[in-house]
Amino acid sequence: MKGFLQAFVLLALASSLASAFDPSPLQDFCVAIDNPLNGVFVNGKFCKDPKLANAEDFSFSVIKPGDTNNPVGSKVTPVLVDEIPGLNTLGISAARIDFAPYGQNPPHTHPRATEILVVLEGTLLVGFVTSNPDNTLISKVLNKGDVFVFPIGLIHFQFNIGKTNALAIAALSSQNPGVITIANAIFGSNPPINPEFLAKAFMLDVNVVKDLQKKLWVAN
Image 1 (tube, one colour):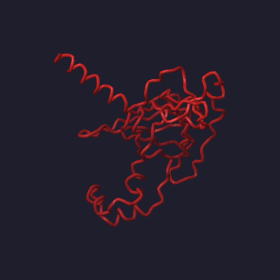
Image 2 (cartoon, helix red, strand yellow; image 1 turned 180 degrees about the horizontal axis):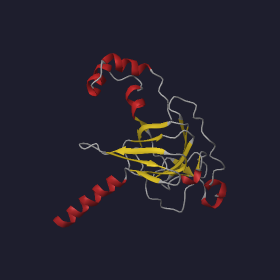
Image 3 (cartoon, rainbow, N blue to C red; image 1 turned 120 degrees about the vertical axis):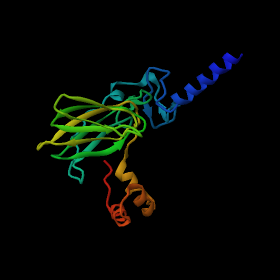
Image 4 (spheres, one colour; image 1 turned 60 degrees about the vertical axis):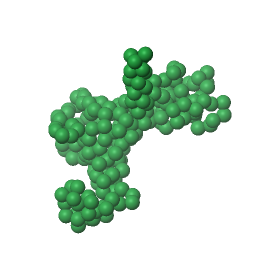
């Protein structure tokens, strides 16, 4: 009996941990629809009747080039369940990332997904930082055709170090990976975080923090 209880507790813990990630699908697919009539609610979306599914539910015509005319010089164009309804419950998504010369995708995290990046054009300096206490920077210069992986939840970045535009495609291991851009979250929060607290946390002058909080932070 003791062994059975221990096994049951371990199984329960494993189940609770697994629930933090995209659930394993229990059917071939669940094409997301907004109309609940004749639909089944699964993972935050209503499912279309599988017999009514078609190729359009699993495709997206064109990922147009993003407008990089902004302070960071990049544009992330996501391909999520809103763009491809058939992604619902499949635990995957993608994004196109356009970079102007010397543009960057600032330090950010995806709380629910590992990311794999493929460079299609240009030269990118990419990297991620490991968790405490080491905070080791793992970084590499990528050229056309190179691939790099950013582990789930870790702060990472991409920077176009070339004089020409760059383009990359990212795949993420969640239909809703989420994104937290570090500077935006810290200095652009609503309502603002107490500047004296941030000054001590970042070892900055409080006036520097107040100035940062006044800036218009770009949601990429």
